[in-house]
Amino acid sequence: MQVLKNGLDGLKDGTEFDLVVIGAGGAGLSAALFAAIDGAKVLVVERTEFVGGTTAWSAGTTWVPGTHHGSAVNPNDTLADVTTYLNHAVGSQAPAALRDAFLKGGPEAVAKIEAQTPVRFRPYPKHPDYISDLPGATLNGRALEPVPFDGRLLGELFPLLRPPIPEFTVLGGMMVDRTDINHLLAMTQSWPSLKHSLSILWRHLRDRLSHARGTRLVMGNALVGHLLYALSKQGTATLALKTSVDALERDASGRVVAVRLSSATGKARVLAKHGVVLASGGFNRDPVLRAEKLPGIPAEWCPAAPGHTGEAQALARGLGAAEGQGAQSPAFWAPVSLRKRADGSTAVFPHFVMDRAKPGMITVNQAGARFVNESTSYHLFALGMQSAQQAIPAYLVADAKALRQYGMGMVRPGGKGLAPFLADGYLTEAASLQELANKLGISPEGLAQSVARNNAFAQTGVDTQFQRGVTAYQQNIGDAAAGGRNPNLGQISEGPYYAVKLYPGDIGAAQGLQTNEHAQVLHAQGQAIEGLYAVGNDMNSIMGGVYPAPGITIGPGLVFAHLVARHALSSPAKLGSNP
Image (cartoon, rainbow, N blue to C red):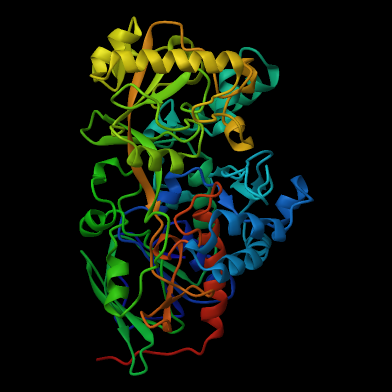
């Protein structure tokens, strides 16, 4: 693979490629890789200095039902079951034909990428669908994760991989996933946990002798590492970093046949013989579209990567491309907490599963009242914040026992090292609930009533207010080992008491360009714009703004990347004439 680290230096004007991919996140790299596997000459254009997009910052979960991995842990699951589930969860909020194409193409996509490249997945032992009380939902088998990846295999390409969010690492750049965290917390109580912990700690210490961060990659960094490594083995691929797309060109028939690019080191017009794939990550960093689609949600609350400027989508709309309609929400969401870093930047920390659903924690609004089921999915939780009264910001409240056991956001479990978080106001501490409410500026009476009601629910195991802990998904992210009657409910009674402010953060675009089952971008009149495709968050979500399961952005991104490569390379090649 040829890598142009500083823009277009070395890329000749008029160079011909079979496929030009705009964006080097998970979906873009996948599209390039599937095309290169089939012998295509591919150009990947990335406007930032890093490869990976938001995928590199994510958990890397890849929701693809029906694979051989899934059947190994859930042999009774069928695509008919998945269809039933998605029909109930998504319904008419997105075209059923696209869901059908995804389900049909998913097993083939995973099988092909594993058979012909070093990319490897494994199934989660238990990872329920998020709306697990709907017909067709299941507890496992549909969500895959990338196996840990050895970043040393990338050699000089390793620094090009977008580093993980610092707050998701420990010991100066060591990545850990949920399995690692559980072992680290239990290392003094279990020989297997001690052995696992010592192994990854020793690996990290050796890494730091020669690298700026750990090279044992997990979660989204592992997935991007796998994809980048696999693509690097394809001699027909070129990667251009720090490069922007200025224009998409069509021939007399209306087919997209060329792309005009620019960088600090020059400009170039390249030919796309079989098409252009938009995989730039969506609109989340476009200030105009944010104001239109996400009013009242500042970009500072968005934990997505910085390259999602919406410029590629704007070029497509200039050709008459239509936006998808009818979604539950234009974005996917999670509650986030904010903290200023030493360098002046803001850390935006998504509260996915590690704290808010655990016993001994509740979330309240500015009246001190609960307003949402704390154990629901992060997407529904953040939507609940936006629909409730006085819930932005909201306050995650815990007692000392829960803080020690689970941590709170950027505060690690164990209850140690709280001073910096208290000093900068990220964490609020008080000897009593009334003092905590006063410090937060919320109703002391409301908070006291909410805690008393929670404690009563914890005794009975039944939350009559929001039915917390009644579904398999909610129970899975609780703590059954806590010994309560409900894994999501626990007493809040041991002082001091703590709180962290929460805001609704958009974690990715759900609304994108309307496409057909081949991921061809559609014109406003409904016909395909020949030679133009969209995948990832540039493609209107096949889930219609609903978040039915983990990995429902990365999974479809991978599958439609496969479908794009197959369709584009089977179409007749066209060359754009020079102006």
